[in-house]
Length: 74
Image (cartoon, rainbow, N blue to C red; front, top):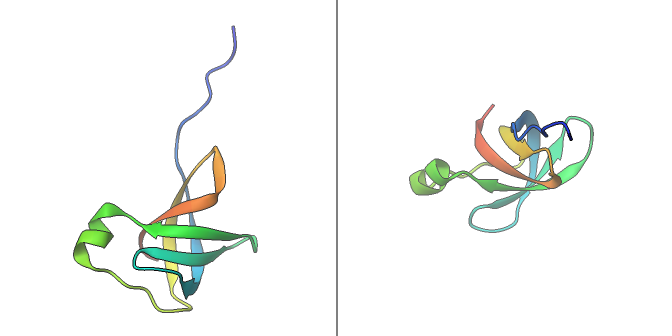
């Protein structure tokens, strides 16, 4: 029997490098990796925007380390 894989989301922080679209941002993680971050539904509904250099809280799945959901400003 195979062990169950965890579906628990990974939370980390990153720095906004640039805005790529209405809800898309290029974000640098603490380890230097650059990912594409998209606003969470509540932030999208609130019309949130983050300037370059802003520190944000991110959520990632353990299956895809190239994309992240932006949850809030850190």
